[in-house]
Image 1 (cartoon, rainbow, N blue to C red):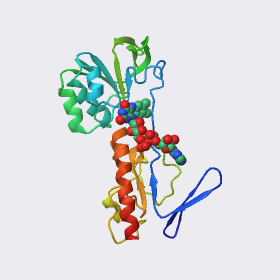
Image 2 (image 1 turned 90 degrees about the horizontal axis):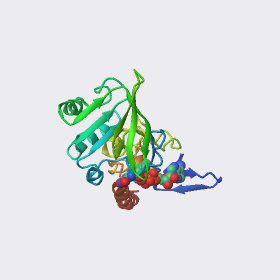
Image 3 (image 1 turned 135 degrees about the horizontal axis):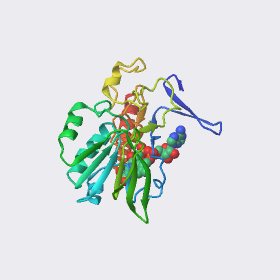
Image 4 (image 1 turned 90 degrees about the vertical axis):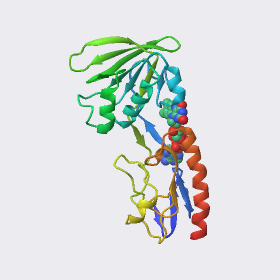
Length: 239
Ligand SMILES: Cc1cc2nc3c(=O)[nH]c(=O)nc-3n(C[C@H](O)[C@H](O)[C@H](O)COP(=O)(O)OP(=O)(O)OC[C@H]3O[C@@H](n4cnc5c(N)ncnc54)[C@H](O)[C@@H]3O)c2cc1C
């Protein structure tokens, strides 16, 4: 909550902290696939990001990407340049439903991406590393086992923002919005523009996974945290 220019944070233990500036860095909960074997193979075949590092892990072999949104689409396109073949598993029957059409078209035109509609993973198998997964066609119930050493999960994340008051504007998925466009917010009270990582409330900043549009990587979360310190200094001199 806010009292005049100050943010007041109420702790679980009953204490309150009042501050001119506040940095929100509460992150997000990544949705897990929740299938047998998934926890066991996290970091050993199950990944939540597709960068050059993960790309190298599936070079020349087969990889599975799960998800129907833009993150999954971008990962599939990127990995198609590394893996021999990418199997893209989506729950529904329409690739264009949750993905930008330019990306969906690109996927359809990429010869080594195979699309599996209405398909989910049922089980993950292996010893110390992922070796295969059982996938199921949810319309027919037909199961098959695919030999694969990498599964990339892009099925969304829930921001930890339920504790925030209405004055902190969020996007349609609940991630905290930041930046100059918030000068138009009804909660923005200063004549200056919000700083890059500043929220709709002057002096309140957001960094890392919780922030709308952030890259969702450790390095960028740390970098944003460091940038926020600089903005806090500037904000205090303008107050
Ligand atoms: C399984 C998995 C694997 C990943 N692998 C990689 C990888 O290999 N490389 C990579 O770069 N990124 C990876 N990521 C993403 C990376 O973990 C995040 O991008 C990064 O941790 C974001 O940092 P953050 O500080 O924004 O949030 P977090 O690391 O989530 O930190 C948020 C902190 O805030 C605390 N918190 C939450 N709510 C409250 C509250 N109300 N009050 C007080 N404290 C609160 C949480 O307990 C937590 O400690 C992975 C993520 C997952 C889930």
